Image (cartoon, rainbow over all chains, first blue to last red):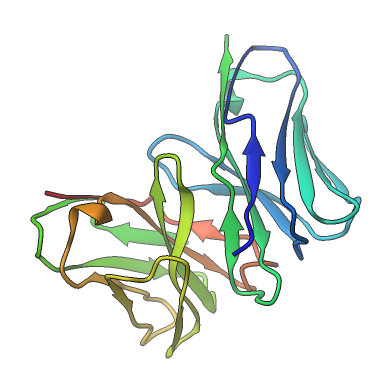
Length: 112
Length: 114
């Protein structure tokens, strides 16, 4: 089973600050997905990246897939309280395209 | 579209009891999965299905059964509940295999086994 390590585990910042969270593995993934989960709800897909070196932007969120497809990062510019939540990365396992492996998540709190 | 629906939202069981967690999707997705989410453990795959009549085991299948008689429904059965099965259970569906297609998650079922 491939593992995905997310860091930091917890992050508390002030509104307006920038931040980056990381998703790392020693294994190669066919794709990386990022989700945000709010308390009491299911995860919601933010983005899927499939090409090494790929960068995708979603408003103030920038996602990057590492060149070797072993890691990914999520950068948030000028964080807002509405960005608060659990950010999860998930990778497609090598050898099987049907399964996703999830990291344990980064819990982000943006204080007003 | 309702998306992915799960019932019940909350459930308390006694050790040894059985129950079925219901999951339905109205997006005509071929792929459906069940995950459990525990503090410090992240989301772990229990079982998944690649179409009606086809299911397979995920990372933590012991103590759970699934079946997929229709495209829309993917129930999860707990055969004899144990305290270790206390968790939040999420059902998810996608139009493409998990590695390629974004998963649509239901709102979850919070299960406590006493």
